[in-house]
Amino acid sequence: MDDTVHYALLTSVATEQEVKREEAYQEERINDLQAELSEMAEDYLAQVKQFLYILYGSCVRFYSTVLDPDILEIMKEDLIEVLTSKLFDNSPFSRLVLSLCRETTREQELALQKRLRVLYNLKPKDIGISPYLTLDESSNILQVYKDLHYENVLDGDSGASASHQVEELPMVRTFVEG
Image (cartoon, rainbow, N blue to C red; front, side, top):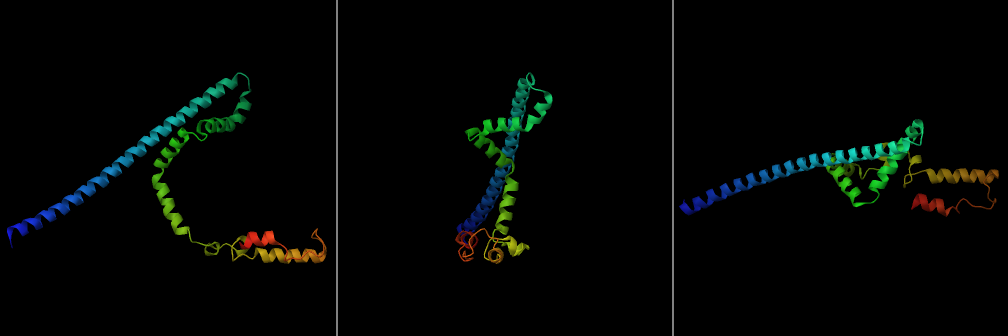
C-alpha cells in the first residue's frame, strides 16, 4: 500500500475519533451548563420567594396596627394573592420568573410532552369512558335528549307548545354533532 494512502486512512480514522471526542465533550459541556443554569434558576426563585415573604411580612406589620390578628389570619391567602398578582401581573419580571420556573422543571416538562404525544390520539372510549359521557361521534347523549324531550312533549311537560318538534333543536344538534 502506498504511504500517502496509508497516511490518509490513518488521518481519517484519527479525525473521526477526534470528532467523536469533541461531540462527547460538547454534549457533556451542554449538560453541565444546563445543570448550572438550573441551579442558578432555583437560587433566583428562592430569592423571589424570600422577597415575597418580606413583602407579605411588611403588609402584615402595617395592618396589624389596625386589624385584629384573627382577621389577618383569615386574610392571609388573599393578601398573598394580591401581592403576587401585583408583582407578576403581565410584566417582564413575571416572564423572567416563568422562564426560571420552566428551567427548573425542564425534565418534568419533557416527560410530560412525551406522555402527551402518546395520549394525543386516544379517544374517550379507548380508556373506558361511557358514550353517555362524551360529546363526540360515539355519544348517545343527543338521542337520550331527543327521547326525553319527546316524552315530555307527549306529557305536556316541556314548557313549549305541543307543536314543537324534536327535530327543531339546531343548537343542541350543532353543539353535539359539529
